[in-house]
Image (cartoon, one colour):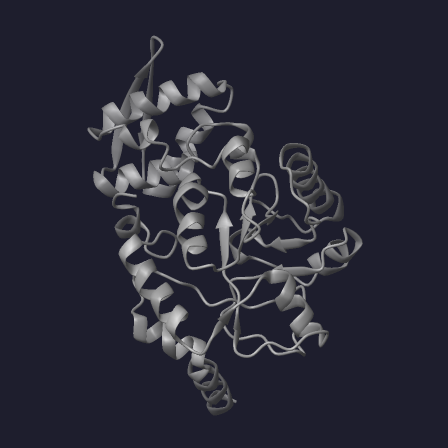
Length: 300
């Protein structure tokens, strides 16, 4: 919406870059299909020519209010994997907002005055972000928002990112409005954007995510597709995902998917603001996969 794509080009994309890629897809021989149709294709229950699936992670507000209407203008179906904690708590995603501010104004130390107390933070970006999160842990949502505004002032940056909700997740009214289009599919991404490896914690994260979305979103589609938070997955996850009725799960491992691919290990190709249209074309064509295979054979 502003400069998020410059701050983190692997996560956010400018509308100009997005339109360039969508224009290519629209006029190419590739066919954008739904995730459900892709599952049928991989299972051998349907046959699509040069199929491509669009998936979007996390449920950022701008993904719902800006990105989905753009896909719909092209008549492209898409799936959004939504993590629900920040849908419940309508405050900015704290760690991302803090990293954004520290990108704008790098510092090794700063001090926040809040409600009569002074909080000092030092170290690298990661250390300071964790320390701010720890300082806020007992605050309610209003206090957290106020503390973040005080942090912006301490860092000498604008708090307009809070006011414009650029680092918020969508709220449930916005998610329901998106579901008015049959081209939109909302699916699972854990509740807190974490997926441990012990069974109880896996079930808690996914079941909470599923229960919240079921209660809040009017969707005719079953919540059976899943995306690993940050693409991090382990073989230990697979039995639990099966037990939870998950039919497909997407990683951030890059590459194309053959019909022999395990449905809970699906690869994706990342669309990044820092990648060119030519890189996008090479990736979709399978050339990048061939090069990975050749390099692997060469190393072995």
